[in-house]
Image (tube, rainbow, N blue to C red; front, side, top):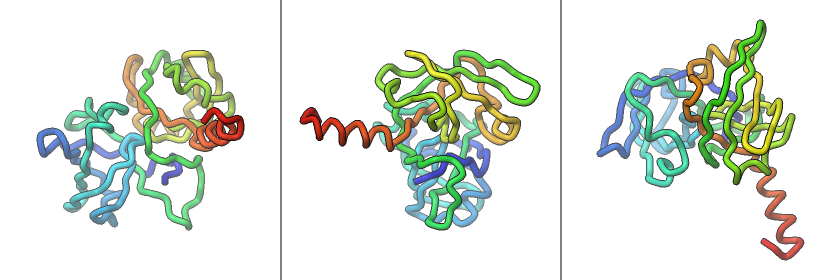
Amino acid sequence: MFTGIVEELGTVVGWAGDHSRLIVRGDVVAADARHGDSIAVNGVCLTVVEVDGGVFTADVMQETFNRTSLAALVPDDPVNLERAATLATRLGGHLVQGHVDGVGTIVSRQPGEHWESVRFTLPAELARYVVEKGSIAVDGVSLTVAGVGPDFFEVGLIPTTLKLTTLGHKDVGDPVNLEVDVIAKHVEKLLGAREGVA
């Protein structure tokens, strides 16, 4: 479990094991990482298999490639990194599992004096879970939905988010990993069971 508060902007070192192991440099998150720990990479929960100084390696399976944008990562790409939350962690964002629901793309960026408005595509199967003023994780960053339509949503990015996450470096057309609010999915399933349609 994560909070969507990025701890560090890491860097992709490369791939190993016939493109099945991702190698990432992240001095902060790797400092106390051990085999078996969870680290979110662009919002994707990965399990650490090796640590060497400030570099960690994680296995990536086909299901992850099918549902996320990780396959497109190349050496020197920046990535958002967050260690798994503990019971003592401040929940500054929202409950994020690191289980990506789909991939969107950046549609537009509107710079402002103090923040930037960014619009993303929203896959049809996720639209029912996204509400104005609700939470969504974009590349692992906990964000508040400022506006939503049938096939898009918008967020406002403050200078800190632009500077310290991948969202400040991405261009129109770039893919992003999306994770909707897990509570909404659970409520939907429970209501469906109550009505006999689960």
